[in-house]
Length: 130
Image 1: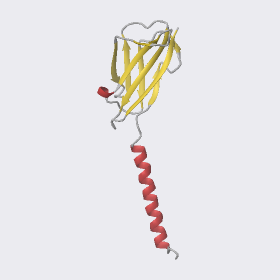
Image 2: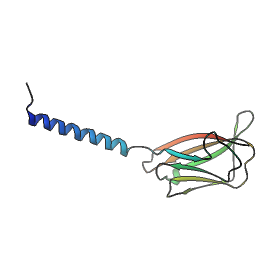
Image 3: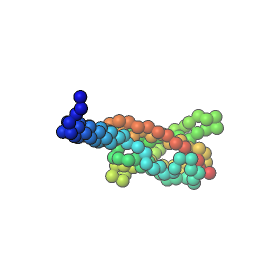
Image 4: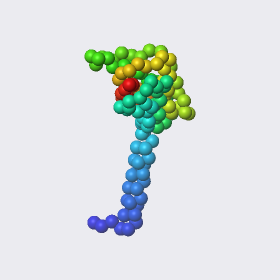
């Protein structure tokens, strides 16, 4: 049994609509992602006054966080105290302001970011101070 042209055209239109709907749904459900970090991953820097993490969309501050640790000789991480974390840049940048200068060593940044979709994304990276 062969389909006539009208039935073929309708099938083509329905298929195109379904494909478009799937594409729009997948784009709408994209999760927040880290776009840029300062200092950058694996960077060797002098003592920064702040750490900035720039994300792809606005963050929910109460559900997002940034923690900084120094890596000790044995590999253990020790949390850096006395940092203030705030949102800047229309809510897309998580900034940690450091109240005390950081010493020479390897530092690890761990973050948790939550956008409007309430889906948490996490990550970490390290940088070195010489």
